[in-house]
Image (cartoon, rainbow, N blue to C red; front, top):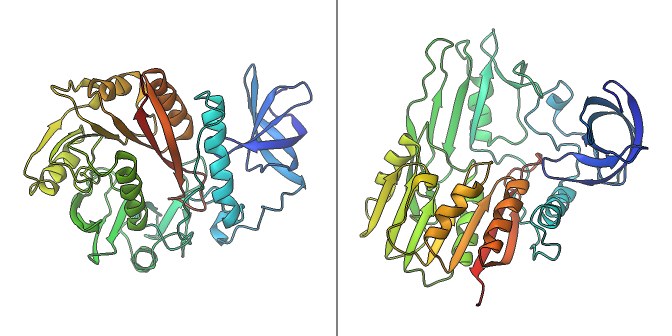
Length: 383
């Protein structure tokens, strides 16, 4: 295989990251951006390593029944916001579950992993927080796939209608990037439009999840849809059980789980200064909550915790994060993963340390994209 070469191949499956996986005539793996299982495609190799090639589809020779025309006109213009609009919505949930099963089998070495059906959420009008570009004429734009080039838009299929109107009806000052957010249960919004020389992200809004009112600042992470946050809270509570006595919330963010998992004692660990400020406000009414501003990997638990929830970034826990979980000596762990490959590595490490995977539940928080959220429930294995 050589870069620039065009080959024909059959796509066998989709894998973590959303690409199709097939094999060239010589048996080497080829990752095919946009390819779906069962499709025969003509594709051009854009990068070649020793054992794997990366290709883009030039022509679909035999299309999958799951393939549809992208419903958003901006996809044809190159908008990179939604990479799975060519997948029929009902098939997206099924394929995402298959990706999770594959990650458990290949990476976690758990071929019989108990993976629940994907929890599906509305596929359009769902996104309540968005970052965008502003073109030279002051119009909102998103990035062209794989670049920083703006693609000017006049609608957005996945954006909440309130934010869509704000986005397209506002004459923005030309700038590098702006941000909008909306709390559906509070009707509060914030917006920023930083300049090139003085990027600023200030302001905050509030949202109510599982009966708790959260303060969320511009520099703090929060789930981009409230219905999805509600689902994650429910899955975490189910994973940890009804009788949590002492909870450690690692990568706590603004306290989504620390504030909504009933526990008499809570410790929350978070490194982002903005999130920690919000976290202190969001846990102010808890009678026995302690908050530590530091990387999870540096935290040393001074006592045991019967339950741990960990919601790391896309890179996952990694060895040091796993070590921080294990120092808590929990009976039950809820691992919230946003990357199937990282999930596989983290679950393998926890299983090797004496835990058993009870169930993993994919959640389709980001329809029309290949992103997957998974909540894995682990319990200390009987000795």
